[in-house]
View 1 (cartoon, rainbow, N blue to C red):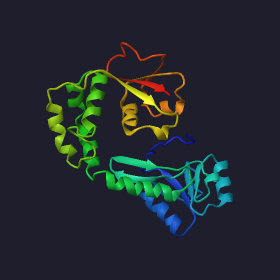
View 2 (cartoon, rainbow, N blue to C red):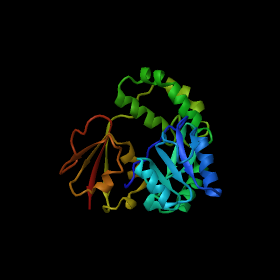
View 3 (cartoon, helix red, strand yellow):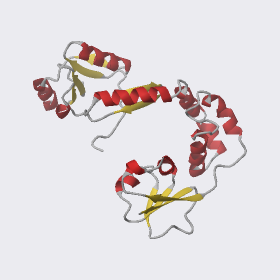
Length: 252
């Protein structure tokens, strides 16, 4: 990973935009949609800039002032890049290629647009509103996270890919059953290439509380697990893996 994706709150903040033509117009619309105040190069308060004509001299002047710059079609001059965006406000999905191919990012966005329901944003808002009720229903953080994972999973009461998921939220909160019991799942890796992961293995890595693994399992596989999942090097599968979902990864 060569860049860290971040979401910047630009409402009411100045952002420099230079250049003219269709590229500059498109960037202006994007900035205004995000609530930014579009200003010229002379604005001393701006800390971000988009150089829509990719002019290297303009980039150099702005960088000398400590301004972070995006230069259109000049990835080597960019401090940040602008992703393709899937907007299901307040849910935003940003797709970036580090400037390698805007066309690829666009194609991925179009695929995701078809997959994601229009009411996904409404589900996010409803979950935010229900935070108090969710905490009361599942007081322990680990149990709460497992319950949310199960609810949002395929076939769950609030399956995020169903347009009616938001309508299932009251039923999900009222369910008397407990979250999925603690368990250990075994994954035998056929190679150290993450592209060879099965859909099941990729899904489990994204859900696991802890990952037990042989020392030979490469970091590129372990990086597919949740960032807060505990990684534990072991020679064999554990007898007492712990609460929640644990994985045992073996290679070969």
